[in-house]
Image (cartoon, rainbow, N blue to C red; front, side, top):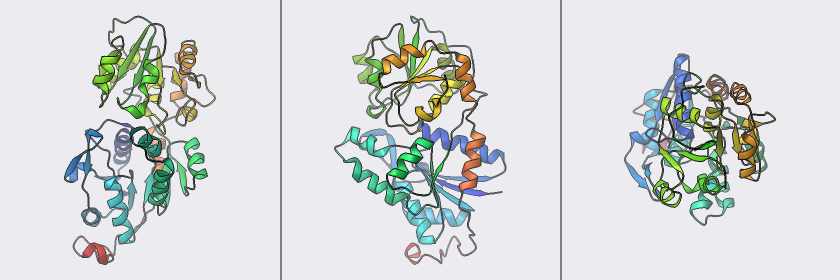
Amino acid sequence: MGRYLIATDAWHPQVNGVVRTLSSLTDELTARGHEVEIVSPADFRTVPCPTYGEIRLALARSRQIAKRIAAFRPTAIHIATEGLIGLAARRAALDLGLSFTTSFHTRFPEYLRKRAPIPEAWTYAFLRWFHRPASAVLVPTETMRRELSERGFSHLVTWTRGVDRSLFRKADPVPLDLPRPIFMTVSRIAPEKNIEAFLDLDLPGSKLVVGDGPTLADLKRRYPDVHFAGKQVGAALASHYAAADVFVFPSKTDTFGIVLIEALACGLPLATYREPGPIDVIAETRAGIMSDDLRTACLQALDLSPRDALARSEAFSWAACADIFVEAAAEFDMTDIDEHGLERSPRLAA
């Protein structure tokens, strides 16, 4: 059995696709008998993110992570994010002479452009540098794999996502006294999610927004006719999916969108822009409508069958996600490393 050390800047109590992916992956791996060690912000002193106070930035040092590596003695290392923990883990692995894999979860260049005047080319240059030493870079869709390849990334492996069908299925809907049809989105409430593109649409019935985030109060004030349900998880989230008629995904910066397959598993047709993530989730099926005109996609999605949505969700599983992760893992031998000496790395031993 394998021993996997996963370094990530995104972990509980954050609620996002990265955390869902890594949590579900960890559950699947441990169910198979593997051991998983998560290196997360909980292990370090943190400070609030300057533009997003709900997220804590970990002040991680490479030597701290090197000690974790030496103590846990993994058979493989995966660096899931490009933040401070990811940078420290990258340096620790390189200084120790250990191979590792990475993953590409977020379109940070586009994300940062929404928040600051930082040219995308600069951020992509940083990301190429970050991922270059990895033996494999796991990306969520084939569309993203092709896009990143064209941008100069290498060793790219398509890494699917899954859905917990014991939780996300046709369920009893939460009682909502709202006019039909109900158009729903589930998202972190933040500028990069492009939620206003959905809220501004002239649609019949009602709009339902599930999620929390830094711009929630502002959107509540500006869109008094929208029903904001706040953060929902587990069975409560599934019952909100069950209450809606169409799932709307206005984001243009997500690389996948796990909420898409959660919605499909609950029988909800999708309405999205034609972007990476939706392109691969919907593909050539009748599970959703993609259009440059989101209103058109929403209205046309009303005519789609829940059966087609459910059928498409069957193409995704956390078992397949774990299979790809294990196959891509760059295994090594920890024989020459011990917790106290860290002999092979003079810089870390200093």
